[in-house]
Length: 62
Image (tube, rainbow, N blue to C red; front, top):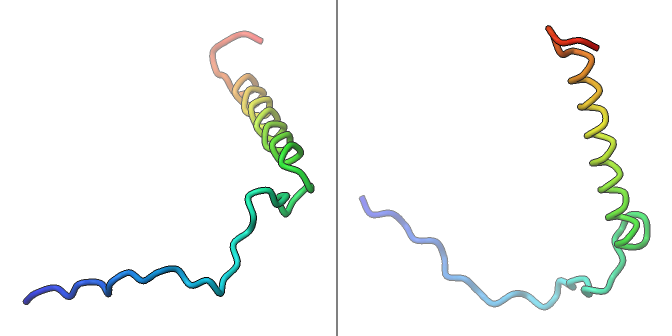
């Protein structure tokens, strides 16, 4: 039994607007602030996991 092929692709519809590349992000108002939040979150997670690893490390000293 032959498989049906997908319908052919069509040109994009111009009725849906795309955001301009210079638009600010929806959160925190500037890309710089958003990147700072992401890096701060990463640093916080690293510290939390380091502390958990250190506190639950079995067989080693303090």
